[in-house]
Image (cartoon, rainbow, N blue to C red; front, side):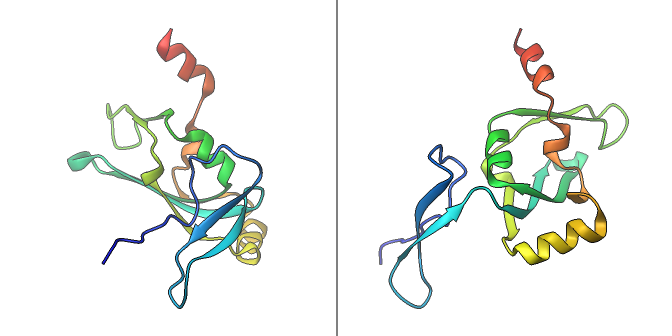
Length: 136
């Protein structure tokens, strides 16, 4: 049997705000659906640094914010202990969508008053100036 794994959406898409993607249906044939890149999602970010530890976070962001971070280097500082000096390249495999449910996302923002639910949000640690200075 041929592998029919088809991504639900792609962070690599550079197209317009609404993209057509094909998703595999569990109860029938593949169907088309539009992905709205302007709505927020609840994301999980995770990177493993072996015996040093791992960085995890749960946060709210648009797909475009996450997509813009892919391939960039983020400097987290000493979040894994003194002298850990964590800077890492971000890849799309580091992210998982927890939910797209806008009601849930709005309630979280309303009651918590922040888009970072837990952990270290890589969007908050990315500094474009540092990125440019690193390569100069």
